[in-house]
Image (cartoon, rainbow, N blue to C red; front, side, top):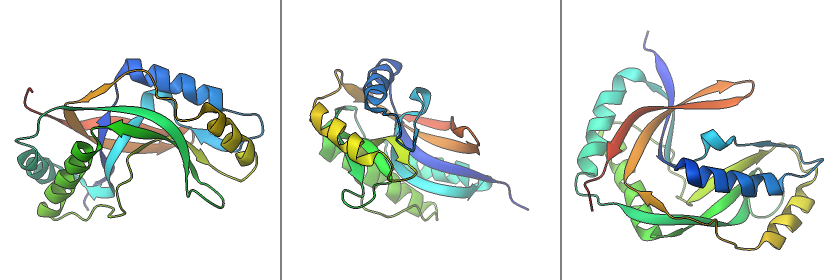
Length: 192
């Protein structure tokens, strides 16, 4: 029987930016809000979610994605402007937006998907909406206050730029305290 791992591809964030993003996230936390906040060490930008995947497919998958990214050069993004998914009704996710070289980020995501498909994998194909998940909302309690607080914060950018110069294949282990992430493979771009 094949062993599976819960996998996704992501751009990891520097510790310095994680600290600034976590500070913003802590400002948004309100009493009475029924949400699970993403721990600082778990902050990342998801490019493609695979879910449970046969571990024997990891090497072919990494090889295909690496081929697609052979000519990729580093680029820069920044974070700012909070929002919700879905944007109306009862939101389930509270997020921080992404700015900067978004076209390059979207191209990176498309290349990762192309590599996954070439490896015979079927990643989540929902339209890519670059964001950083800050919290998963469990019930509507307190959401209107969070919306107000996020609106007050406006579209202030988190100070600092992230130089995207690699992508990581990540494994997610679900625990009662939340997901724990570990790097399975890291693909660095050529110096630029």
